[in-house]
Image (tube, rainbow, N blue to C red; front, top):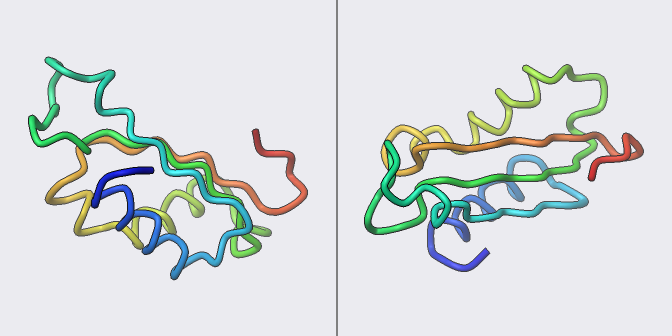
Length: 93
């Protein structure tokens, strides 16, 4: 996590999900020249998030919770987001 968009993603997910683990990875450099690449950078991200909020929630529900926390960023600034969401004890990577 380095740039302002990555920091904003981290802050929003921390506030919404109270994670015990949160990794925000900027994958934008891997997408230079591809559709959706933003020359400003910070357009493609992966997040790994482990939170008790996800206990008893299915994969789609977990993705919705993450997407809700980042809705305006996804609509206006972030082109792609890969989400790996786990509840504690599920053995996320």
